[in-house]
Length: 150
Image (cartoon, rainbow, N blue to C red; front, top):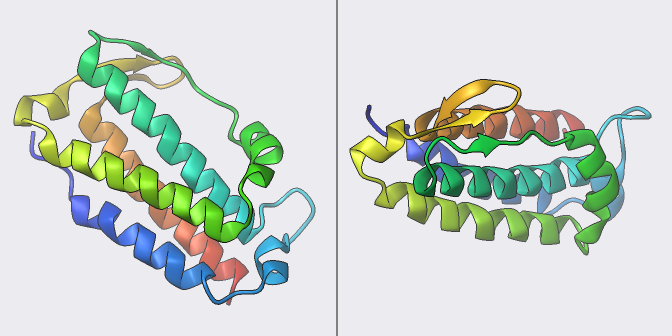
């Protein structure tokens, strides 16, 4: 298996900074409707997801067919998004995690992309599957922020 296109992951940090850096705290924290995430919450969620995938990939690379637990994204965002000082803090947390993960992905040997774990909700997933999922996750949430901050 060939490595997924890591350039897509590399560009997300710059896109997230460009979308959020010059916006007011008010704009970033405004929810479109009750129960929907603000741009600040989306940024915090992206950092949380990066953390979760960081652990999952490391487990798959070092354990034989580990169980990968799911998590409640809504609950994490509701409880944890306020832990960042501001949106810039969430973006910085995302950047640090993404940079570390990119260094890991760049170090992988071809066979390591095929290593798999068993996700408790989705079944078998490889490292390559997880990276492809992150690529789509990034696109989805960057588009969400673009709609929230026209």
